[in-house]
Length: 398
Ligand SMILES: Cc1cc2nc3c(=O)[nH]c(=O)nc-3n(C[C@H](O)[C@H](O)[C@H](O)COP(=O)(O)OP(=O)(O)OC[C@H]3O[C@@H](n4cnc5c(N)ncnc54)[C@H](O)[C@@H]3O)c2cc1C
Image: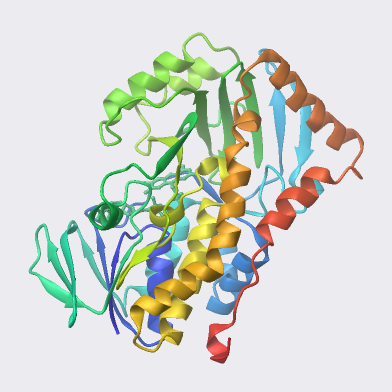
């Protein structure tokens, strides 16, 4: 089977890895000129993602590239810690996940594992798709036209393959929040730690990364949807600066470093809701097909698990690519929809809209801190992360 994947971030290289294991011949086309190393911390949660890393023989490689995650404090305007949770208190299922890794580092682990066996084409993108009897005829913006047995869009929230399949970005559901991430100096000397400061409708946070030599700075603000070009970084920085203007704590210091950061990232907290993730021999995986937004804390987990399941179902379908896509969706969709529903209401914990909301969040965290046996939040996200039963495709039986 000849498979073309669009996008070399997380879902793309993971899918390539498993397809090669199942004997496929794989090409990945990525619009960036080389592997994109930017991006901030992403989480891997739940038993299924751990099992996939184990089956891939990559647990150690991913752990070695991960960041220490000790815990998180809510702080006041003056920087005093008001409530604190340690990651161990949630067993890796709370606000701090068990594996937190820089997106580029995770991407690199799977890229390095596949680069010998997979054809990576950087600096190009799919221009046209035509699903015919003898295969999917693909035209590229730069390279020559080619034919594949299956095409998969692993090209993120603003997926080009999704647009070619289903039209414009109407399936995006905006969750009334925008998020931004960039690297800054660790001037507070945080050690494996996150500090979060909120005012009504807006939040800034710092999370120590790269052996505590830097921090991931993040900003979130509540806002109805507005028009923006997600590639115009200068304009987006102006938006973030104006939305966070006048905030207390370390906000000004962090905002002042945005221009120097080579990895500034901004996007809306949006979900992709599609009635179907495929059409014929063309399908979608990861954020392209079913983004739940960073508010879910599960975007990368869903990309990893989705890629594993898609590779397995395509292999099992034995040449009937459309049936493989359908089987993958049937298996995965109930779990994905649960996560999307969970993320819908999660904006309040990232950036509460009112002073009362900020107070309630602090009180809830204090409760967990003071009564370690209160396990409501633990049970909630734990059950969600572990809610998918991973099939074993290497055994060849359902
Ligand atoms: C540079 C970058 C930084 C990020 N930073 C963060 C972060 O700080 N925090 C967070 O929570 N999430 C971040 N994300 C999103 C996060 O990686 C995803 O939510 C999650 O890991 C699922 O990954 P994915 O592979 O499905 O999609 P993505 O990670 O979005 O990857 C999509 C890939 O497809 C490529 N692509 C897009 N369009 C095309 C096209 N038409 N043709 C070819 N290639 C295309 C992109 O360049 C990218 O490499 C970031 C994504 C990127 C690309």
